[in-house]
Image (cartoon, rainbow, N blue to C red; front, side):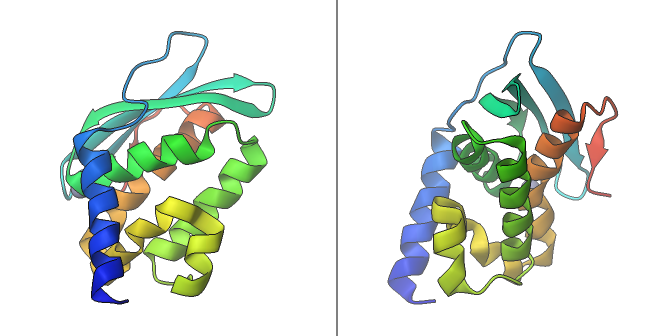
Length: 151
Ligand code: ZN
């Protein structure tokens, strides 16, 4: 990856960390789930308001490192308005990205701004920070009441 692109990506992450999108709670009957990454101390709650199969609104609150917060912020923006199936597919592509299994050329096309988090694949400890919001979203969609943990 070129240095300029690297910097651009870093700016996206810093921006979402500083001004997280959809950083609020949703009232019932929206579903929610909690996620915890003990290795880093990231802790977040994701809310999903479903309209049939569509994710009408997705929000989060929590404390954690810049990567987990930026990832959660970008995730909420990316899956809002998508169907459950589309959201699940995006989660799968994102997991491939952060584990280094999605070529950079495909990442931008498949994931848009989320591709900014591709750099974490070089830092195994950070992969859990980036994927925690997605695991938590999946738990919320599944209606799981137990806290999700990366460990
Ligand atoms: Zn973290």
